[in-house]
Structures are given as C-alpha cells and as structure tokens.
Amino acid sequence: MDSLKLIWHRITHWEYWPFWLIYYPMFPVWLYYSFKARSIFFFNAANPGMKNGGMAMISKMDIYNMTPTQFIPKTLFIDKNESPELALERILDLDIRYPFIAKPDIGMKAFGVEKIHNKDEFLKYVGWSPSDFLVQELIPYQKEVGIFYVRKPGEAHGKITGVVSKEFLTITGDGESTMVELIKKNPRSHLQLKVLEQKFGDKLQNILEKDEKFVLVPYGSHTRGAKFVDISHQINEDLVNTIDGICSQMKGFHYGRLDVLYNTYEELCEGKNFSIIEVNGAGGEATHIYDPKHCLLWAWREVARHWGMLCEISVLNNQKGHSYLSFRDGRAMLKQNGALQAQLKF
Image (cartoon, rainbow, N blue to C red; front, side, top):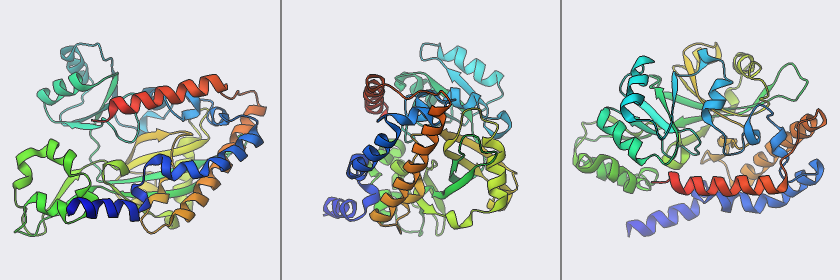
C-alpha cells in the first residue's frame, strides 16, 4: 500500500518527474532558439571560460580555479590512480580535517557527494569512485541557496534572475517513533528510504527525543530529497552587488547558478560568512522552479525565459568570435554525460 501511495505522490507532484518528462515537451522551444542562433548547441558560447559552456562534462576543479579563492572551500584534486595514503597526506597538508566532503570532479545532481568521517570511509570512497574526485573542507554553515546570475557580454553589471532556498532532508523526533517510522510519514523522505537504509542501517531503528532534529541528507540536492523554496522575492540590491562583484571577476562567465552555503541571509547580502560550493554554467537549472507551490506551466515559462537569455548571450559571444559546438562534438558530449551519470548513481 505504501508503494502505491508513493507512486501516486510522484505522479501528482511534477517535481518528482524524470528530467526527460519535464524537458522533452519544451524541445520545440529549444529548436526555436537554436534557429535564432543557427546552432542546436549554441550554449557552448554562453560561458567562454568553461568547457562546453558549462553544460556538461566540465571539471569542477577548473571552475574552482576561475572563482576567487576567498569565496570557495579549500579544495584538492585527487587523481583516481593516486595512492590513498599519498592522497590523505596531501589532504592533511592542506589543513583539511575530518569530516570533509568528497565528490566527483566531473559530476551532476550531487551524485557521489559524501561526507567522509574517517580513513576507512575515505578508502571506501576511493574504491567506489569511478573517476578523479575532489576533497573539500566541510563548510560549517547550515543554510544553502542557489542564485541564478546573468550578465550580457559588454555589460558592466549582471543581474540575479532567481533565488532558491534549499531545505535539507530532515526528520523531527516525537519521542515515540523510530527514525524509519518518521521517514515514512513524509513522502519526501520516504522516497529516499532505500538509500537511507544503505547509509544508516540499524541506526534507523533509534528513537529521537521529542523535537530533536536529525539531518538525513546534508546536501541541497533535489534528487536527494531537499525541498526547494523559491525566495526570489528576497532579491535586493545588496545581494545583487555581492554576487555581481564575485561573478565579474570570473573571466568568461555570463550565465549560470551559484550554490552557496551561508550563515544568515542578511550576512550573505552584505558579503559576509558564506562559501560558494558549486558554480554551474549553461547546464545549471533555474532550480527555483521546483518549489512545490509552482505549477508545471509556470516552470516551463521560467525555463523558456532563461533559455532566451542563454541564447542571447551565446549569440553575442559568438559574434565576438566564440564558437558553437559542432553537431558531432555536441552529440559526443551528451553521450559521455549519459554514461557518466550511469556510473555515478549508486
């Protein structure tokens, strides 16, 4: 019976639909902008500083290297073939301590992102990882937002087109129910139960104290259970100035989403106590569309609006000499991306 309820919940809440089901109906819109740009892979020119315009198959380390260092966590690139002992030595030399974050250098949707608490967990991650990965210091801030930024080529300043607050997947104790019972009470967490059982095992039989909160997944990823809340109405001049001041330093970046951990929203707007944990280029979604209060038609309009900006920026950069991807290279990129996604899911 529970499985039928979950299936019905997925059907009636479009935010859980597969990516292709949400975006395939919009293919005519993409074709329209492709016609305007005279290339189906026009996005390559949107962010000349990023491989493939930041659509897919780009090294996260390359993106961190183009981001001002004071705004990102300490980050170390680990070659898949490097010995774990040497890697750990380099991690400690950079003053990164347990727990820290490990994630694929080329990844998507928080697949393969894990908090590492000790050497055994690190060795397990090395054994699992199908490719090169990154190690980052753990940022202490407990709040996360995704900020979508757009700046036309030649313009001195950009703008923020949407902000999403990400509520980590969390349960609250009642003093009576086990953790697994609490998880099953909310479809958002129940849909993650199989992965949570693999992660926590018998711990899910524990009973939390009344009003005790437990974060099941400390990552702001929609695919891993986080709830997305559209707070675009909170965009203000201070936030725009802060984000624009950072992005204008990133050579060849005009369009994309910054995922930011922060202490308070007021401090973030003032440029204090925050850290950029991801920068997504042309492939970054305007994730405020996934707020449950938004209907699918609204989301489609918002996607179309952002694609229009993506097209305009790409055309302007193309006129300045930045090329589009060839059809052959574009198809190869999409094929590689699909294969990588299959590897990273576990």
